Length: 242
Image (cartoon, rainbow, N blue to C red; front, side):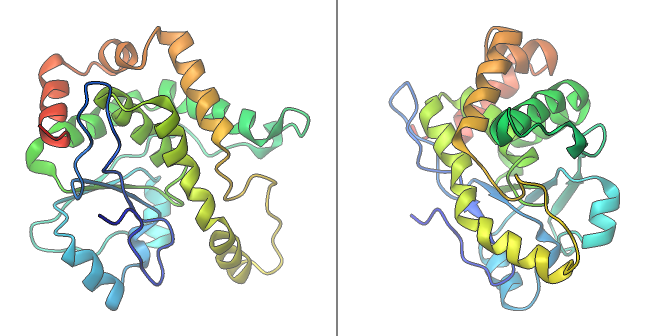
């Protein structure tokens, strides 16, 4: 099976299948994808996307981002959910060089788990439903907002932390293309030091912090997000091999 789906204008479209779980099963392929902005879909890229037979798109960006940069093209039978999970845009003035990019990112991710509860719950409930699949979860780069949500999903499925961290870090393969695209659009702009980076340590710090605050990832999902036992059971039934 292919993890990295090749597109001309989308740089970080990946299948989340194949990871082993603690009970000896594995995440099913071609059921759950993660991506950067789908607003760039056009031409042959749109044909590639249609071939995946996606039923549901969860767009975690702010509405102004979807309006400015475009959303997935409307297609018959495709359900689109715009579920922004950030309370506000990041304040890069809070970045401290001595603490590093990973610590800054992990702190932002933890804040999203506090401020974005309602839409995180809706996104999780949508992913849990078997009739939603195949699902694509995306944001702008498919790294931060998408990364933290998919980390919660994979944790509930029983995927090992090392694999969750490694899956997150795969975004690093697209960093050069993200920087090149941004620079072409903003020739006089200045990037913050962590732009496009997905250091493994950031995801490990985030998962450690989330567990420390809620005792476990599942406790966060059930007690804070309010995800019931039935949705979690359905999630495991349709996203894991038998």
